[in-house]
Length: 315
Image (cartoon, rainbow, N blue to C red):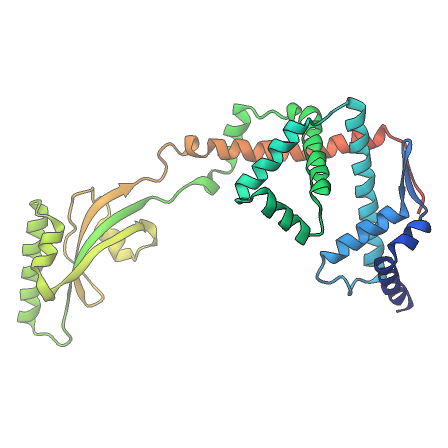
């Protein structure tokens, strides 16, 4: 409890007296020839806490873990900055202006509305330009030292497809139109016979190529129906699957009695679901593999950067 109270006091003190915090700043870590101060770390902690819903519910252990994670992040950022400087990477004003203009266009902003949006977040245009510049430099660095080493071969794409084919398969679908006759409760045998006769007449019309809409309209109020839309055949009731099995587009089912109705089904389309499946998903698979390889390569690169650097953590 005492530790938690001290933590809350630290937050209040740091938020209310940044100038004093800077005066009392110590060295949190040394990265090659540069240092990271405890003031910089405190600022990172306060920023992270402001973005957490449970910022006032962290235990002392969780708070220490947060500080450790953020310090490691600051160290990695410093190593990236130093590598950028070592390689002499730069961003021309024209390149920076183009990037900011792209942000404006994609978000439908003018220069004035962009500045207003930044001000609402406590940022100036100058600080925003610096932020975008750092992002461009980081992108250039990763492109030079990480992305160019990432290659995905056609055999890797095919192997991934074969291993994950069930994730990409699309269930075969059908498109069906129906005409249904409701069987009245306690109807006489004669009434049922007449209804079946009417269904057979209707089926003959459809088989002979009469337009479905005209045939349905001619039934007036004795039948209902229409386009049933796209259906996954295996999701249908077993009796319905049997009635539709092997029907090709343009063909009509036999009369099916189901759920107190007589049904006729006109098959209008079949989609096997697997036509050109590999070609359809190849680009997505390549992007997935490239992202995985890039993440792996980035982690390796960070370790290499860290291994070749002098890092001294002092807190």
